[in-house]
Length: 353
Image (cartoon, rainbow, N blue to C red; front, side, top):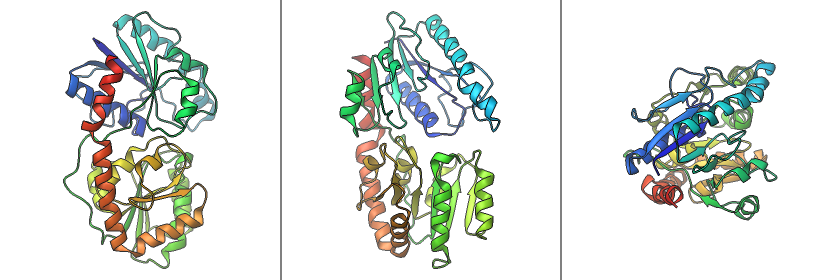
């Protein structure tokens, strides 16, 4: 293989998909010295949020974004304009003489097969309820966890399971006496932060020393702050913007709480676990149950069982020794199963066979 092109929606966003692409590109460059280029359909910020190897070029196909509050502009950019940008991407791929294309945005890519180009689709969102026609255009579908593998194999003849990985293993672990719950993510509907705020509010009066910190940005940030203000918990529930110094955030807490309605394979759970944080999440499908070992490294709560989530969170808040034992197990589990060293050989096999 001579050249790999990774195509995604917007490399400058701070979401999980963007982090995965940057981590993968950096690791492939470092391990195998591959000729890699990133093609970004959109560009909502001036530069990538995550640090990417300076020798990996990025081609931006527009300076537009899908993150609009205006519904018409959002619809236009996600449909017709996206189709046009996908056409530009295909022309660019053909002119670049790439051997392998890894699509992290496969809505319209590829339009057609190009001779001697291998197409891979990295699927990190919820499994579709039925087979998508565009799957037939790919040589391989790469999924992040084995859940529903039989259904996936009915969609495509060549499905590989390659989880996300930790790029580094932190030297420090958290201190369990800290009375802070942390959550990270884009402030959009699917992350379910409004129900996490409601749950914490129900516990707040009995745990006066505890606070909830939600880290992220997004179109619902103002609505979430209004919800917090209405509960009169401004000093106990804190909204913080994304920061590159995530280590200090993880080390400042003793519980990680995920409230998403659905997830793919959330990197934040890997990261939180690597710092020794017990994790609590609703089972929104995806790979959550692959990362959290229920009742060992944390808890996976059936979706929408908010009372169960509240009671489980209460138990973790009450018991420092439980937080510590689960957190230590979480760290050991993700290091053994999701380190870069464990995962990169799987990518080598897909790319070279």
